[in-house]
Image (cartoon, rainbow, N blue to C red):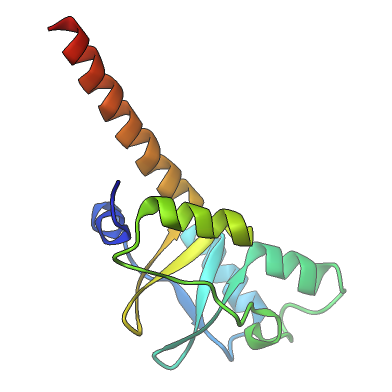
Length: 143
């Protein structure tokens, strides 16, 4: 089982996409669209202040009839961010995401954001590990 640091090392692009807590929701949604991302970290200077997702946008702006150009990210973001460590396992991250029903998980290295993984990143790794195991078993049986 891989650590989350190994997953970050394997990611093609480990760029951390974020917006400021003072950005408008419109600006955040535009960044999400440009980056083809479902969520962005919300930074308060160098500190992780929250996370904003398409789900937050749908629930807190669209359904409530608010203006995305007038509403600030800080007003609708999830402020109590669930995080994990770079030394945690993929299995642990999957358990955390399942328990909290989240699709994006910031990874911290001490108090610094090291990256973000999506449920897709983790499932891809699990499938890869399982495929390797299957191939090794097949080779063992054939020999």
